[in-house]
Image (cartoon, rainbow, N blue to C red; front, side, top):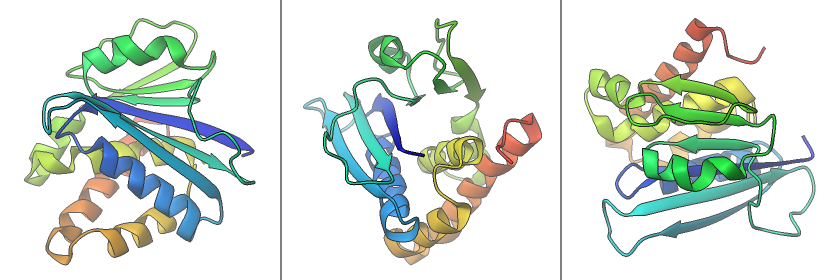
Length: 182
């Protein structure tokens, strides 16, 4: 990995800012990489459009903005419409299958029922961690141990078991679909 650009797109309340923070922290603190995070969101605390960008590199990041994401994770249709044209040709899009219908044909598109999976775990609030686990299983941007260590340091003790279960659910689904990197 020299430099990988990741964009999470969704709406306020879906936890994409936290997903980006978890990824960046895991890459820097536990993964030995450099990382930069930027975020943008509408004026609404919940329900407004938002995106979080993470750049992970093996050297200091000299330009902190994502221009053509290598990986785009989109959790609702408006984010897909806004960002899918930016994905680098041959890049990867990961989408919430119940909410997003991508149109690109020159990128790899993977879909998962993240919201339903989180609800089956007992709380849809961990949908972002399901998606993060899935994305990491597919891309191996950081090792699983790094993201688990990050969860242990950044997530409140009362929510940790649920978040670890959500992470595992994402990893398991990628393995079941045969898309997990080896």
